[in-house]
Length: 100
Image 1 (cartoon, rainbow, N blue to C red):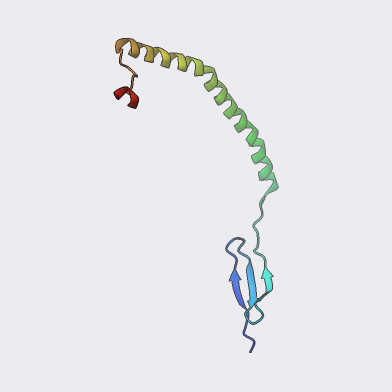
Image 2 (image 1 turned 60 degrees about the vertical axis):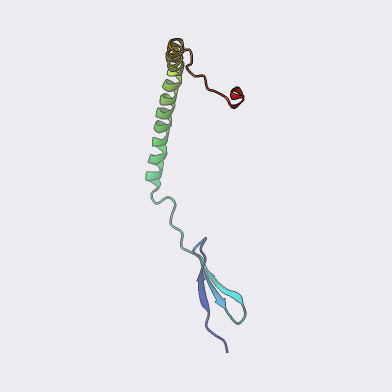
């Protein structure tokens, strides 16, 4: 009365389990074939060499933005100060307990 094994594919690792329904046990396990992580070592080395240039460029952009940050904040403050002088109600919001 032995039936044939049936196969179940694991949704996580894509491995194949062969199960015997009479014994209710896993009889065989076939691991999935994993793709190579690095197909060409020379290409991987070139990619790593390019990373340092990209990091340096990102740092220079960040440095320039930080350098100009104080000027931007001063300009924003001056503009808001002009608006506050022109309109005394500028920026004032009514709060719930002010209405009581």
